[in-house]
Length: 115
Length: 115
Image (tube, chains in turn yellow, blue):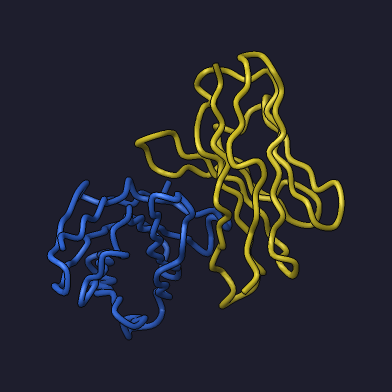
């Protein structure tokens, strides 16, 4: 069964550095998402992406963040100038779109640790 | 914004017994989707069950079933014949039809299965 994959599984970075988190959504899916889960807290929506542009974003998704689909398979989240509070688990998700195909399938997550 | 509330931070159940996890939500929409996701220690979010609000029939998936009470805005998950592998964090999630594609998650319920 197709799965969403994410790399790396764990990223450690110094405060102020830039990180790129990578995701490969399920191949016939059209909608892509990033969520964040700070340790011990609930999963929070960051951004959704459709047709090569951002379709929605939350208040968390400020100018520090950007997303890109650089090719036909990868979907990336870039965090510029990381802060300590960016430490979290970042989940990528995708869904095919259309009625009855609303279920989002999540990747295993990337644990980001900012030191 | 939509809110999802899981009032039980932790639950435990004896192996082979039945447990019910609670979830309530707040929305002004009439058409929406509800989900339960399981997050084991590996931290990958796995879909457990999905319910469409316009369907009156409660969804079931093997040992997992829901009690969907639309008027009460309640969506509880029942796990029958609990197994050790059911031990995980369970998240209730809401997706509207007029509020974009993003999911709104509850804070989660940590389920322990006692052998």
